[in-house]
Structure formats: structure tokens, C-alpha cells
Picture 1 (spheres, helix red, strand yellow):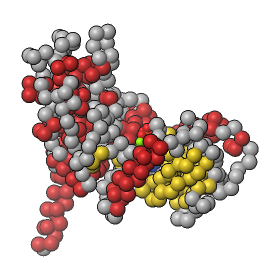
Picture 2 (tube, helix red, strand yellow; picture 1 turned 90 degrees about the vertical axis):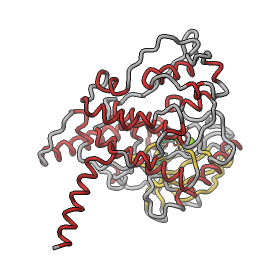
Picture 3 (tube, helix red, strand yellow; picture 1 turned 45 degrees about the vertical axis):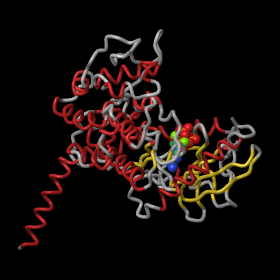
Picture 4 (tube, protein in one colour; picture 1 turned 180 degrees about the vertical axis):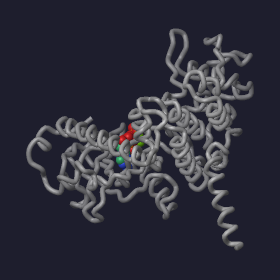
Length: 420
Ligand code: ATP
Ligand code: MG
Ligand code: MG
């Protein structure tokens, strides 16, 4: 992909925007771009520099992403809405063409990485709730205030707010920001050497964090419940929704196919039209994955059925039969269902309600399972218009019970104090 129309090759210490940004290390990449940690010499802060592929379709996508993220940033001056912030944008010309570049605030690992670090066992429920609150705050904001559907909500697109400034990072601080061309191995082998070093650094950093948190826990007398969750105790989780490259405006023409497979809503599969509530479906799948460590629906193509059909079958196994009105409503309905509302090619579904799945397969307590199912089932309604909205979910007891009782206690104590 490093050819004309494709990615722009970056080396550590390359500069952008007339010397303002200095490349430090690669953070990640996607279908459209590579993303680099860069040092902003004007503000002395670290930023994430997204360098788009240069072909016209990628430039078009970048223009769209810039339009959306500018609006997100401008309408949230207090930085409270849990969405990524755009710092700057410009064009950069290189051997592969002219690349749109976006400068974002620098964030941390994605919550998909968090699930991996936790060995796919699921996160502690209080952490899941923290993350859900952030995602719902973001969805409420983009849906109601901006009229935007994200269309690609998933753990990979939720990034933790980075509390570790790279300049405070014990390993990084030895070298400081790379302001000039470094000598030796970092610079001559291209990506491989840098990646190997980065891997080592990451391993060391992770071990250090685990050691420090374990020590802190033992000092504070905190007794972690599950060993795998130790690193996550006592950390106040904040995260932000990113990757607005695929978003659409609800009132403009929309693509037929949206969302990453596992997070795709039934109305998108059936092509019966979608709106903001499609994001709510992906949100529920994401919340399930955070709590259990496993993808909620992982459809596969079979010998005589398609991935779409398997997907619908998996949904019905957990959520029950799709109501007739919904079954017949889509452009694709006749491909999958007979006139009785049963799948044509997949019979004999094993119905396992969500709460039972959570206790039997994922070893939740009966109470935890019931509460989580009570939160998720309404969001996984086959009828898009019946799903609760983001602000309605934010008011659900699952996200408020312990929190509210704490706040109420404080409130009542405050009012007593004021009366006296
Ligand atoms: P996609 O194919 O997912 O649409 P893309 O080319 O649009 O990819 P992004 O998803 O925006 O690119 O970014 C690619 C990766 O770079 C992310 O998965 C993440 O690991 C990293 N990244 C992006 N933005 C930031 C940021 N602000 N801070 C830290 N890392 C980031
Ligand atoms: Mg992405
Ligand atoms: Mg993208």
C-alpha cells in the first residue's frame, strides 16, 4: 500500500506542517491511513497524526471526516462529550501524492486491547459501566445535537483517555521527544526495527504498570476479586469514541451496508432502513463483549446458508423469534425467511435467553446476570423504534443504582448541613 495513491511512508523524526509536528512512533493504521504519535512543537504536547492515503476516494473520505470531527470539537468546547477532538488539519505532499492529514488529541489503547490484556475474561462490571456511560454520552451528543449516526461502533473504536503522557513515561523520558534525526537502528531498518523496539517497550511498560498497581492494591488493603482484573482496580476509566470516517447524517442519503459484521443491526442485514438506533444495537453488542470478553454474535458462512442467515439465527437464539412485521419489512427478507417467519435454511434454533447465557456460559451470579440482561434486552429489540435512546439508557438503574444512592446520601447530608 506504500505506492502512488496509498500510504505515505513516515520515518521517525520526519516533520509536518512546516516543522510544527515531529513524528515519534507509529500508533496504528487502518484501511484509510497510518496514525503516528507526533510532538507538537508549538504547544509542546503529544498528538496523534493521521495521514490519509492519497487517492481521490481517500481524500474525499478525509474531507468528510474533517467536516464531522470539526463539528464535534466546535460544539463541545468544554470537552465533556467523550468524542475525539480535532486539533488541526493540513495537506502533506510526498512521493505517493498529496495526503490529507488530521491532527487529533493523543489517546491511549482501545478497549479491544483492554479486553485482550485481560485475557478475554471480561472486565469488572464497574469498569464496564464506566465505559458504557462514556459511550452513551458520546452517542447522545452525536445523535441529538449533531444528527450523526456513527455506523461503526465497536471496541476497537473506543479509546481510553491517555493518563500517561509519553514524556512522563519512565521509558520514554530517558530519550525525551525525538526532535532531531536519531542515529543507528531506529532509523535505518524502517518499520520492523521500530516495531520490535516498541513491542519490547510496551511489554516493559505493561509489567511496570501491573507491578505498581499490585503494590498500590496491597498498600491500600484492596483485595482484588479475580486475579486477571488486578491491573484494572482503582483506575478511573474514561474513554472516547473515535473513527468518524464512516459516519453519516441521518437526513442525507445513506449507504445500504454499514457497521462491522459482528455489531451489525438486524435492520441493516434485512435492508429495511436504519437510523440512530442502529448505533444502539452496536452499543449493546459492545457492552456484552466488555462484560464477557467474547463477541456477542460471531456468524459464519455454512454449507447451505450465508453469513447473514447465520447472524439472524444467532440473534433469534438469544432474543427469540423476530416479529412478523419486521421479518417481512426488508428488501432482503424474502431471501432468508419463509412466509411463516422462519428462516428458510436454518431450522431447529437452540433458544438460550441472555440471562441464562450469562450465568451458564460466563459464570455470572444470578443477580449480575439479571441486571445486565435487564439493561441490554430492550436495546436489542428487533424493532429499531422500540430501542431506548442513549439518554434513556443513561437513566437506567444498571448505570445509576450504586452511583445514585451515593449521590443521594451526599445530597441529603448536604441539605441537612444547610438547614442547620
Ligand atoms: P479504519 O479502517 O478502522 O477506518 P482508519 O484508517 O480510518 O481505519 P483509524 O481507525 O482512525 O484509521 O486509526 C487507526 C488506528 O490508529 C486506531 O485503531 C488506533 O490504534 C490508532 N489511533 C487513531 N487515533 C488515535 C488517537 N487519537 N490516539 C491514539 N491512537 C490513535
Ligand atoms: Mg478504526
Ligand atoms: Mg476510519
